[in-house]
Amino acid sequence: MTHPAKLILDDYRRLFRDGIWDNNVVMAQMLALCPLLAVTGTATNGLGMGLATTFVMVAAALLISMFRGIITPEVRIPVFILLIAALVTLVDLVMNAYLYEMHKALGLFIPLIVTNCAILGRAESFASRQPVHRAVVDGLAMGVGFTLILVVLGAVREIPGSGTLFADARLLLGDGFAWMELTLIPEYRGFLLMILPPGAFLALGFILAGKRVLDTRLANRAAAVKMAQA
Image 1 (tube, rainbow, N blue to C red):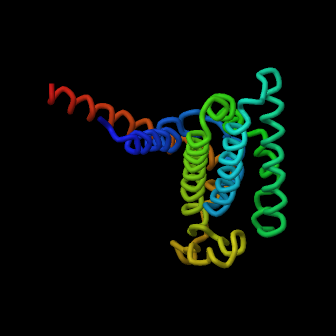
Image 2: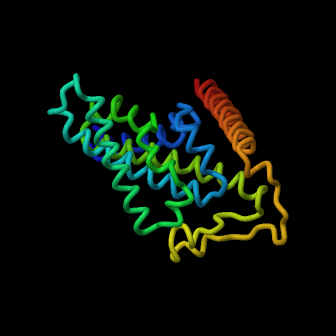
Image 3: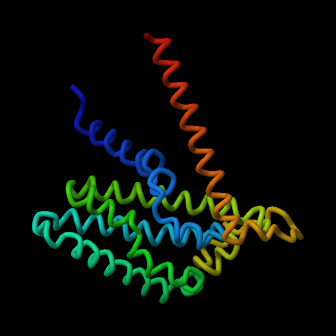
């Protein structure tokens, strides 16, 4: 008989695999592309937006799961949007007060987290139908997956575009993040295309293609192993 703790741990692993890879907000669902393409001129901006979005996703999942029993189906969508908007307003005010440079760099895209279809979609399809612990883990997994793709896309654009990685992390995220600032190519003049919007589309296209190729290879390897064991 399988121990209950192991069942819970396996469930959490599946949720994280789903959020980070199999059902990633960007790479699988193709959602939240507007902030993804707009703010990822640097990995630092991507990290800031990802952390803000992750907080909203986790907090929204927690609240919606807690109150799912008293939210009637007729008003669930307005209530979900109201909760998400309140959380985004809180994030916006806190960032403006304590992370002003990051707030200024991300600009309008912080309030626009409210319109992120991934947050409302997970609230409707998962958090409103699951117990609190599963809803919170799912929100965290989806947020981490979104943050990772933001950081990866930002790095893919920033390195050839500017020759740096996590530029201005200290100014945007605080002095504790100064260790992240790297100059990979000294005296580099930069490749402007990668910093501009067309560079974001190109980089995202290569990332998506890489995921498809890797998924195909993993599926073929798993099929070969299964045939060998048969």
